[in-house]
Image 1: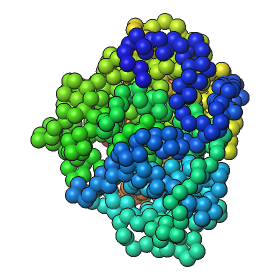
Image 2: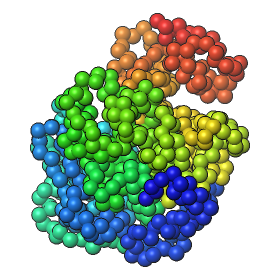
Image 3: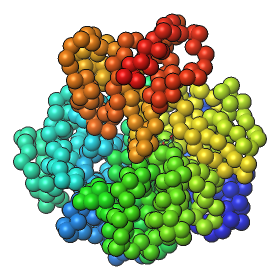
Image 4: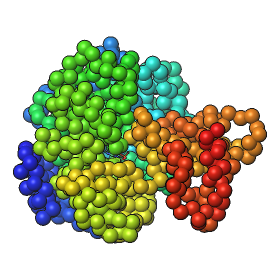
Length: 627
Ligand code: PRX
């Protein structure tokens, strides 16, 4: 672990001077079935990236067998939706038993090494257990956030040709029960690869169990053994696929592989959170996102840490819930998203009263830029001005944290993710792809050298991986983000420079939302952009052309229903404006920067609009918006 600034500089220097040696040295702490000797092969043109190529391992052996001395320590504390329902805790040994039993159930249902398994679960312990069970037997998990619609779920099942879905009989979410099993049933109707639906009992809701396809976990688990040998995996065998939105087309399956992901998630977890034995760590994310994968499950468990999994919502039963949990479990490291911070801040400080947050040592932020006001509130009211804020910048594709302060080592600066971690070589490029070398500049954020957990491909479509990340700026990994570098070399992330909207820390592709809106039969065409939103960071603004404006239709609600049906509630537009036309260039491309300005209530300085085919439409849209 890096302990002070001098060590950080030494680590950083070594990691750039000889990356292979740096990561080879770090990787020696892991349990390999076969030690790797070939550390890195790469090019960013094809792209082709292989870390520890000739090594063999199993990531779960590195959680359980390697951490033998932790066998009786707590691995997971599960905090349920209802504050008065009891916690469940698992020691490493107990978790190991659960993982092995689950792995044997998967085997019994015919799941083999390399098969894809979809996990569509609420935040119950089985979410983590089933991920690890897949990893134990070499199956590839793909967790789908349980708020996605049936149509999003079936797209993902079809894309990866999954054999099995793991779900529950319902999700408790605040005071609602979400019927996830019904969603799975509907999704499977438009798929053909699923053999079984393994169902966990959680809400005891009445559900439909299809004969020969749907299996109750609590029944089948009694028929299997509690021990399961770890499958021998090659370093570059797939560990998981996680779907994420981009600027075009349907979400793509980001692929992470076994060894590099393992090495980098433990490395970043222990350094960024400065986790010490005995600490209690809590990340509030959902396992449906990369943050949950890397910093609820893999990073902390590889380190032998005590990690909290929370089923509920920050505002249920009221806006004190996070603070109550921190107090109850004496949380030392707390990791959440700016949208949650802003939402809780908006409820007022009275919800903090009576809770002792003095156990906190490090507080973190992830998923979107944190504005200064939220940063200050978090720092003063939650961290009580003694906890550094780790504003961690990274992505689904990066697998782990890339730019972040190391607490009490690298000074924090509000709204800045600050400095790259060892092994990360960021650069800023101008729009012509020329490196901007000076400080105090802004540019397109790219990375010029591989790190162990960089994505390897997009599942089933390597060309798309190349086009999306390695073609805009040849020879570099392009993040899709803009960034500023200050005069001390610290990075501030400015947000996406592509057509991706970041809503409450979730990536939503504009094309995806437009596709969903266009499914509504009264819509002729639509264009979606992000706009500044006080709580969510960005909201979704849809401009739509409808067939017949004179019809008495509640377009706002109809369109939101359509988007909920096709993607899920998280992608529902906040605003819908019916417009007579969309600003288009002569080549037929929608000029989104104009729409972005209008959505942000900025009605002048549109820049050069001389290439517009229909410049008059700009004023018409403004008029419609003002009315
Ligand atoms: O725009 C950046 C933003 O979230 C994007 C990645 O989203 P996703 O793959 O869903 O992963 C989110 C969790 C790692 C980035 O391209 N982002 C992430 N962290 C930050 C951020 N923007 C500003 N500051 C951050 N700390």
